[in-house]
Length: 53
Image (cartoon, rainbow, N blue to C red; front, side, top):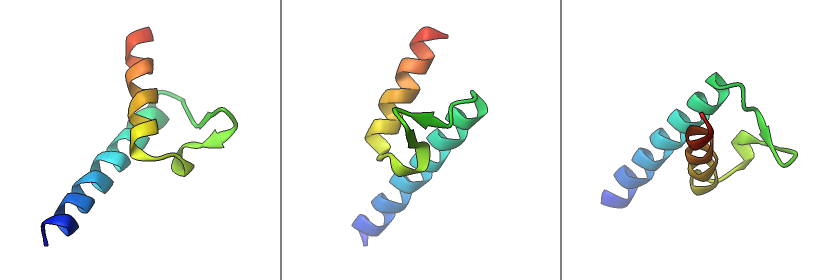
């Protein structure tokens, strides 16, 4: 049961990152749509966007 909850939390965090990147006007990275990327790839992109802001 913990793995289901953990997976749900990761999915929620991933969805939140997706929304934050979209709000910043980022829709694609290296020719790939954001929804195609993993949570960790999204996290790296989000972190990099915060450093340049």
